[in-house]
Image (cartoon, helix red, strand yellow):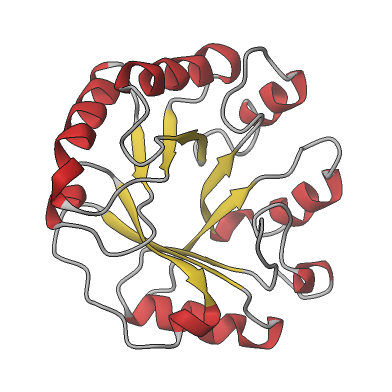
Length: 217
């Protein structure tokens, strides 16, 4: 059983939290996806520190964070933000957050992903945070089918439908001693990407797990 690659929601600044990025670099061989979020999205200008980061060792792994507001944000605005990531940071992969999971809004994401592909997006990640309608797994390269606490992750979970998209699980509020077990469970559940942290809401992704500062890579 193959261990999942790490999918890191790296919502922390590369200059202000340089130590966290150094810790992440120490585990680079295990990382398959790094989501950057310069300003609750791409923002209006260019943060030169992010531009340097995106041109460096993480170039092939980085995706830019974008909010779809559960299919209420105009598709043109989301595509425009994807183009802003390319223009400001040279990033051509996107992480679409606040994605619906039901069939009622599937048409929105069909249009969005088609337009993103036409605009040259190399990799699309959709994050409904739960197992969605099977159609979503036909649209993206990666679909986040779990984003919740370790307590919720320990319960029986619905099986994800078959589809070409790889599965990703994001688990927070997990004691450091359980992280290996959580990643092993992700592998058993068929997740190709996963991340686990002991950090908590309201934003468990604004830093790295506390154990990373002392544990070996």
